[in-house]
Structures are given as C-alpha cells and as structure tokens.
Image (cartoon, rainbow, N blue to C red):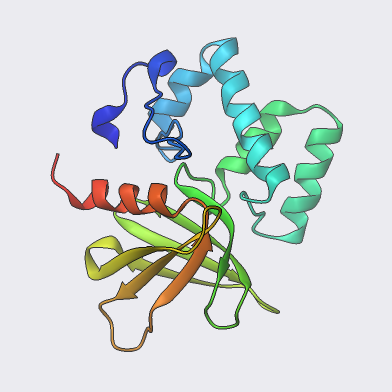
Amino acid sequence: LHKKLRSFDQAFDFLKPRTRLCFTRDFFSPAIDYELGQSEKGFSFLFNEARFHYLSGSLIPRTVLDDDYFKKFLDENKEENFLQLARCQPYYGCFTFGPLLCSLPNEGTKCLLTIGDNKVRIRFFLQNAFEATLSIRHIAFASVSTDSISMKLQLKPDFPKISSITFATSDVQVISSMISSMLDPF
C-alpha cells in the first residue's frame, strides 16, 4: 500500500467500483505529524481526522477521564490539546477499522481492529474490554463474501490457545489488502 502513495495531494487510488481505498499514513511517526503540523492546512487535516475518528467511535479513549477531556477540548475549541490527547490513545492509528462486529466470544460483539507495525491489534467491547495483539506474520486470513454490504474476514492465528476470529464488515477487502501489503516485500 505504501508503494502506491504519492504526494499528499495525490494520495488517492481507485480500485473496483464499490471498493474504497483510504489515504493512509503512519500516525505513530512524530516526523510526519511534525511536518503536517508546520502548516495551517496540515494541522487542520490532523485535527479534523482525529475529531472525525473520535466522533465516529473508531478512536476510543483509554479512560473515562480521557473521554471527559476530549469532550471538554471540543467544547472549548482547544484543537491543539485535543490532538495531543488523541495521539496518546492506543488506537490512534491509520489502519483502524471500527466498530466492527466480531463473532468472538459472543456473536455481534463490537470491536476495533488496528493494523500497523506488522501487528494486528484487536479490542473487544464486552462488560470489561480486553485486547489481543497478534503478529501479522503469524496469522492466516481469508475473506468470504456474504452479501453486497458486508463481508467476513477470518483471522486464524498460528497459536494453539487462540481460535479463529471472524469479523463482519464492508471493509474486508481493504483490510485484507493491507495485511497482504505488509507481508509482501517492497
């Protein structure tokens, strides 16, 4: 995927109809955030992106206190404070998809899936949220079409204690291609 990215203004590729490829970058790179933050346009991009992910539920605050501060910073238009807090959250990442619907351990469990640094991080929202981190190099995956809206992605970890995890989402093809791109040598 990184091979296809061009300059900031041209980072769009079109695949088949009904397939969406998002502009992606490494949120965890301070150098990229620094470069973007040098211009008003770049800072606005960073802030709007973080705000969108927070409001849509794919950027999940680590604690209730963090969530209170997110709301406060938005209400008071403290964009820089909001962005700094967003960068501290574990699921602030460019490969975040969520909430997804996951079949483990209960049918329809909401969860987040983040792909980055050759790892897949999964967070399940049950009575007490829990997380799992799997190395991409140690999982097999298969995507299965179910209907025109949602598809299923199955992760099969190479560890005996973890059974397969199945996600239902419209982003299955995008997630699969991202995992493939991280496994294939550049």
